[in-house]
Length: 531
Image (cartoon, rainbow, N blue to C red; front, side, top):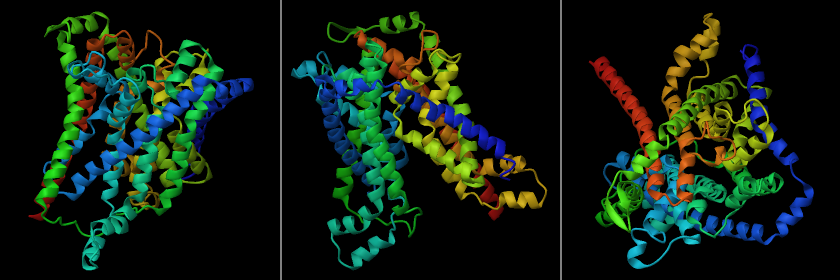
């Protein structure tokens, strides 16, 4: 079997070498050594680094605490409609980070709906912290929520028998199992916030962070050497996160054990966490509601009457063309990204070998490369080539930017499929491709759909990975948010955010309905067979 996949291994290795290693090495080689001392000693860089660390640490702590309490509410209380609540909690993941900053400007900016009534302005460090929490807490929630599923529930009964109180039970049982997910959430969220420029660009004002500093150096001053040095600084927390996550992986529980946890009746606990959960979800939808309000009002402060002028302006400026570009990019990333990633996972998870281990490392290492750094590396490496400023390059950079998470989904799913299928196929003289098509893929099609949705949604909302690579002919829709907001056209920017949200909701809803229909079909088959 390894021989049959030899050519595929070589192709994948070359592909990852060109799309991962080559751009990063080219970026590093672009550094002017004399610029390092000048940059590190400059007041602007030191201020941006200090600001990034400050908002990163504060926002990460708040985000992880918010996420843990939400995960606790979903998993350890008798709250109803959990599936719907989980969907609502993850809605912030369906819009670009810059849109969260835009929502805060709409509500709490200098002329915001709420701030104009009370006379305050959220622009600055406070705005970045709040926007970063809104942007990142769903990621932390998903990580911690997944961790709750693997806690050995038998230990809670043992803790009751031993007379342990709530705090002792938490540290002896819950924290033991959630230690790895919590650390993963902390590093993942800090990396997201530290390397994000969408929120700081929209709501930061004069409070400059490192990603905004990089953006201004490259886009504003065309200083690629300085931008590359800043990019390397942005790599540091991501690389540390990657190493810690890899190191702790062996100590994490990998399978659920024990029976389903029976929760004690505690109405006070349930009411408190129900209120808390609904308040957080309400906060998310207030931001989205501000988009709707700004989109349909002529002028929120001067002439708050219903108007279609923002829609007319957006339509007259070829929003359909930009939407088409985004759909081409996101569709291409979803289709080809899922295909490539699935075969990468198949080679590393079921074929294996020395070359497969190298492919595995190259795929996982993309977790440590922020989108802005990857976009800068691609801009330096492929400038002047036939793929520069093309849809192809935008599709490739997004595949590489987002490949790690879908890869791990596929890798873990393929590990759970019986490893003897290929051996049986060889014994029965059945072609390997037929086994993959008729057995392996059907066994993992739920994961394949989730991979497709992940690639599509993230490609629709990303700005950082494509900020240096688009032109007027292939500019994606998400970039328009930055353009409109920079010109204080908040109604138009709100409409673009709503369009992106609508298409992402549609793709998630379609995947959900397909999965639900399949679950019903399986249930009916099992019910029929039982008779």
